[in-house]
Length: 120
Image (cartoon, helix red, strand yellow):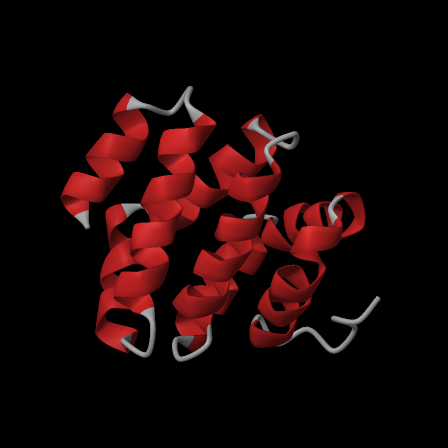
């Protein structure tokens, strides 16, 4: 995870690289609470927030961010608190509103964050 975070920081101005990093973290954290916790500890929460803020026009990055967020929080309630406290809900809702391809991924991420109004 640390190497992925270093890669993301080194190429923080390239949404294509960030998309690939998000995809790798998504796969590594799938059904793995330990890996999801390690990802958050390594800085994945900060990276996803910064990437979503910095590249709102990158549909692929927004979608992969939603997938990653879902895997980071679905089995780790403590990660929900961290991400929600840092404003992730607003960014997910923006991606959901702006891109049809993000609708399902964003809805699932909002649901897994424990939000009751995830379908709005």
